[in-house]
Length: 298
Image 1 (cartoon, rainbow, N blue to C red):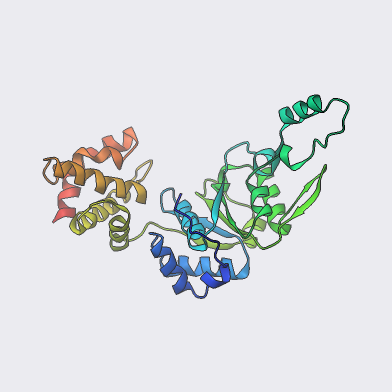
Image 2: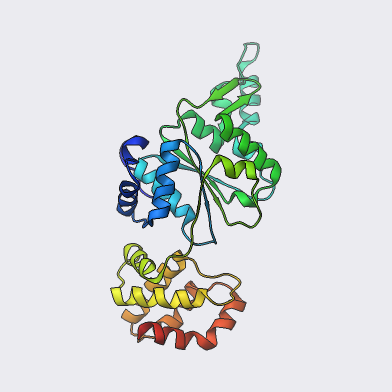
């Protein structure tokens, strides 16, 4: 998680223009193009959730981390999965602590619905301090339709009703980011509530810039070669195309091998395991890898 600034920043102060958003994101080592910066700007200024869709590895989660950092807020991440329910997203009661409290109280009364017995899950955490936290609902497409309906209700009113405690409402408009790999279609009602943006893989020039920004000690020529080779590799029918993070890792790994004595392009070939992480994809790409790398280095 990116390092958070010392104090929370007003969303309105940061989002004075899409260009200002892009500049602040770059300072957090995230390069956003004009369309993404505009979507982030509008989501903040309109007070609407931001829905980011795209293939795995294009930087959706990293965008949420960068947004939290530029606002100087903590990122609260709700990772979705098949079967996720309200207890994992909203709140739970700590039944063991409640029982212990009852036993220790003896004949005295004890409020077993006090805050100390309430386990706040991501949605409740954000409601309690919306000005200090950013909510990331990651891979919403992995959840089922029932959970999606629950989330839609939450996004409508930004409140949670706890039968034993009453209704808890957000004192300010929370910043909410949803991501989806589009493994299934999301409900139209959820889409209409959000500012939408589709994130694609960057072009070779932008990906080279990202590699230079994120990698440790990689030469510009190496970053450009990696970006060109990865673009060629992604164009092939792979089961799991490499993401941007894998491209950065490949550049780092090949550089380490080259400094250890492996010449180009052998260093790229030996480091392929950090880029391609599927056995069938490795077998498919192996016969052409040498040519791909040589053309990228030319």
